[in-house]
Image (cartoon, rainbow, N blue to C red; front, top):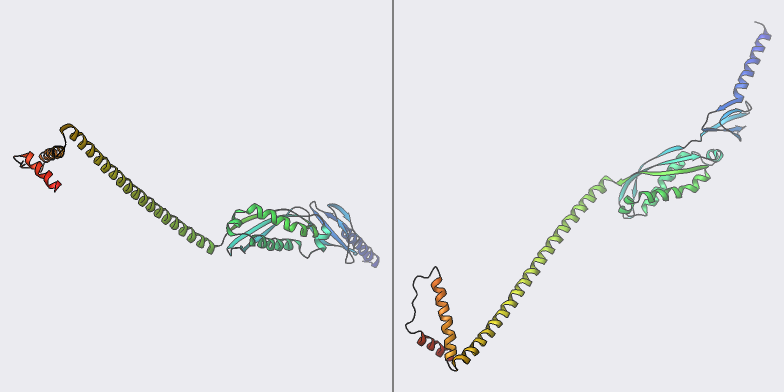
Length: 285
C-alpha cells in the first residue's frame, strides 16, 4: 500500500468527519445552544443546521415543550402552629433558551425550590382551616409569586397545581380528639339546656297552678258570700242562713260518705237542726 493512498484515505476520512461535525439536525421541540471557543454563538432551531467544526460545539440541548416539574411533599407550619403536608406540580416552558442556560445553573431545580419556599411562606400566613380550604387561592398566589423570577430565567410558568394538602398524622389525631371533645361539650350543653327548660316549665306550671288555686279560692269565697246574702234575703237574718248552708254541706258530705266504697256504717244525728245550731254556736264562740 503506497503512501499516497494512505494520505488520500486520511484526507477522505477527515473531510467526512468534518462534514459530519458541521451538520446538525435538531428534532422538533428542541433548541440547541452553540458556543464558539467557549462563548455563546447562536441557537439552532428544529431542522437542518450548519456549524463550523472544531470551533463550534453544542453546549446545551433544551426542550421547548411544556416541562412537568414534580414538587416533592414537604411539611409546612401554619400561623396557628399546625403541621400540614403538601406537594405540588408545575408546568413550565422554556421561552428564552439563552436566559435558561446562562441565567441560572439548573432552571428546573431552581423553579422547584422556589415553589417549595413560596408555598411554605403562603401557607405560613394562614390558619389551619383556611389553608385546608383555600387550595385555589394558594395556587393563584403561588403562580403570581414565582412568575417574575421565572421570566428572568427565560421561563414561563403555565400552571401550578396543588396536588395534595392535608394535616400531618399527629394533627389528624389532635383534630379527632378536639372534635370528640367538642361533640361531648355540645351534648352536655344540650342536656343542661334541656334540664333548664324542664325546670323552668315545672316552675311555671307550679306558679300557674298556685295562681289558679288562689283564683278558685277567691271565687269560692265570693260564691259563698253571695250564697249567704241570697239565703239571708230569702229566709231572713240571724242564724238561719248559716244553719241552712251548713246543713246543705253537711247533707252533701253525708251523701259522698255513703257513696264511698269504704263506708260500711253511717250514723246520723237524731236532730240535725240542733246539731247545726250547736255548730253555729261554736263558730260564734
